[in-house]
Length: 201
Ligand SMILES: Nc1nc2c(ncn2[C@@H]2O[C@H](COP(=O)(O)OP(=O)(O)OP(=O)(O)O)[C@@H](O)[C@H]2O)c(=O)[nH]1
Ligand SMILES: [Mg+2]
Image (tube, protein in one colour):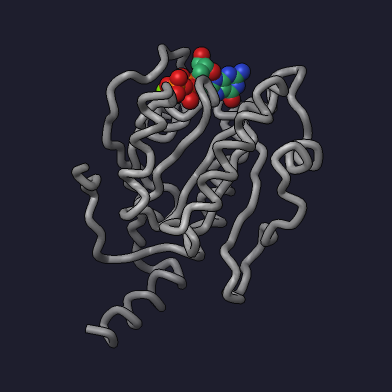
C-alpha cells in the first residue's frame, strides 16, 4: 500500500493525476466564502444572502479536487467549525480586505485556528478578498493587521517541518488571485483516503 501511495503521489506531483483534498474554508460574515464557491462551480459572480444552512461543496482547481463545506459565519456556525478540523488536509481563511474595521476580529479567529492543536500540521491558505473595492488594503498591510510577519513563500517550497502558511490577495468578483492560492496549497496536500464527514458531538 505504501509503495502504491508513493507512486500515486509522484504522479500527482507531476500533474498527471488529480489529487483530492478536504479544505474547509472559513471567514467572517460577508468575507466571500459562498461567492467563491459559486464562482468556482459556475464561473459566475452573484450577490448572496448570508449562509444559514451548512452545505458540502466540491470543485476542481488545476489538478486538485477540493471537497469543502460552506458552514457560514454566525456565532452558532463558528462554534461548529472545530467539528471539521479532523478531516482538514488544509484550511482556507477569507478576509474582506476592504473591511478594515473587522481586521481585529479576523485576526482573533485566525489566531484561534492557528493555535488549535488539531491543525498544528495543516497548511493555511489565507485569502485577502475584494481587492476590487476602492478601500481594499494591499498585501503588506493586511499581513501586518493579521500578524503574519513571516509566511512560507508563494513558490514551490520544500517541507522544512514548519506549517506552510501564505496569503493571496484576490477578488472573487474579478476572478483574480484565488486559483493561484489553491495551486500553491496543492503542493502540500493530496490524499486518496479521507472521511468527508464531520465528527458527531
Ligand atoms: N466587490 C466584491 N464583492 C464581493 C466579493 N466576494 C464576495 N463579494 C460580495 O460580498 C457579499 C458577501 O459574500 P458572501 O459570499 O455571501 O460571504 P460569506 O463569506 O459567504 O458570508 P456568510 O455567509 O455570512 O458567512 C456578497 O454580496 C458578495 O457578492 C469580491 O471579490 N468583490
Ligand atoms: Mg455564505
